[in-house]
Amino acid sequence: MAVAAPPGQASGWAWRPVARDALLARAFHSCTELRGQFYLVGGLLAGGAREPSSDTVVFDPARGQAVRLGAQGTPARSHHDAAPVGGRWLCVVGGWDGSRRLATVTALDTERGVWEAWTATPGDCPPAGLSSHTCTRLSDRELRVAGREGGIRTQRRYGSIYTLRLDPNARTYCYKEEGCHTASRSGHCAALLQIPGPHPGHQLLLFGGCNLTEPEVAGHWSHGKIKEEPPVAPHLMEQLARLVSSGQGSQKGPQGLRHHSCSVVGPFAVLFGGETLSRARDTICNDLYIYDTRKSPPLWFHFPCADRRLKRVGHRTCLWNDQLYLIGGFGEDGRTASPQVCILDLFI
Image (tube, rainbow, N blue to C red; front, side, top):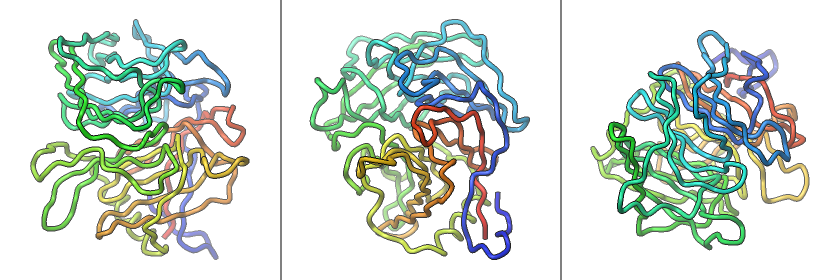
């Protein structure tokens, strides 16, 4: 939503609270839009907790109301990722269950209101265990999983990339490891962005999760290979274009950022908050970064924030109805989960 800048204030941005509910107070959860509802799964309810939550909360952004879903078999998960499939299933991939890192797929059938443990097919080559990874939807039958495998003692020096094939009718899945690798990343984000220019297509970029400032390509597809239609947000896209026109672009992105949020809005990847690895104190951030792919090379735009109450880590952003929502996350102390839902306002 675009609003007029307050008197004496130049172009800028702010998170505007629109709802508040204790059910939403969590971090390192997943938050996925499906049929106009936000599904929050698991997460940690307080800093330092080792046991993840085993509840599912549905937030209706149109009404600003949250309810706990009474579905049976809700998995206890944190540091996982989730993707909508077929307009019906919410597939939760990997994560921490309180004792180990998993690579399994558990799906919520939103029509029946039940959780189902899907089965790995013969030939499945799963990761050693996933947490703080990313899972990007390419189609109803294919996801791209990227991130570091295993725990601190067993992790590799590089990040693996997997194609995860799904069969919703059979309730099965199968991992296939791709031949390419990335830097060892954990707590990064992923953005599936269209490639402009004479050779259009799509590429999947990874941001953060290590000390590198440059994004890495975790997948490249020629024109027509990706059939996904991104959410339409024409007004927000226009306002983001105006905001970056007031800033100074750079080819260097944020260094050492992890557990931040990322949402794709047209040609922009919008990153917010997170934890920086580049300093020992005051590590939780409240900065807004916009990655603009309209020109080559793409440019970063950094918009800092002076309001320490907006520091967030382990939060999520979701795009719906031409607005970007901020949900959950720990605040400045890294322990207290926010019960607020906010909408990004852009001042022009």
